Length: 100
Image (cartoon, rainbow, N blue to C red; front, side, top):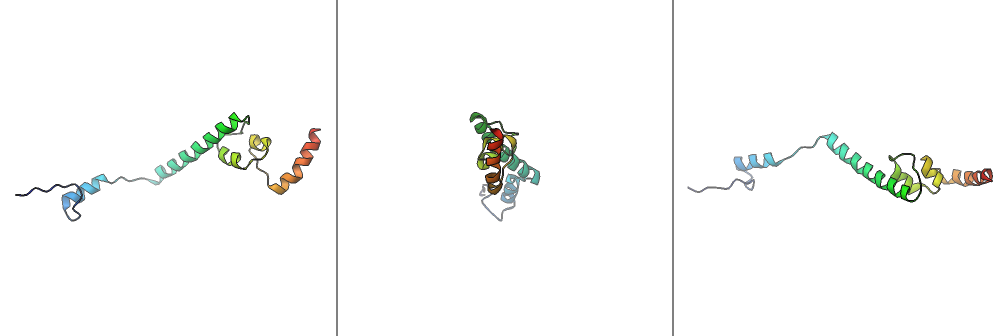
């Protein structure tokens, strides 16, 4: 009598198929969403720390990675507002005049 090892390597063997089925893991949509949110939060937290080290106080942690990437002025990062280039070109001279 010959004994076979049932480790999932025989595709048509019922015990091997059962071994493969037991090794499967299922992931719900919520788990995938949570993993994506954790990744986004991690990026935002890292960006928030870099901004704080550079002397900028962002409005919140969420969205800090985007603010860090797009803000050109300190006040943009602190207020969480990114202005379009055209608007920024018009606004910055007025802001400078008002500050004087």
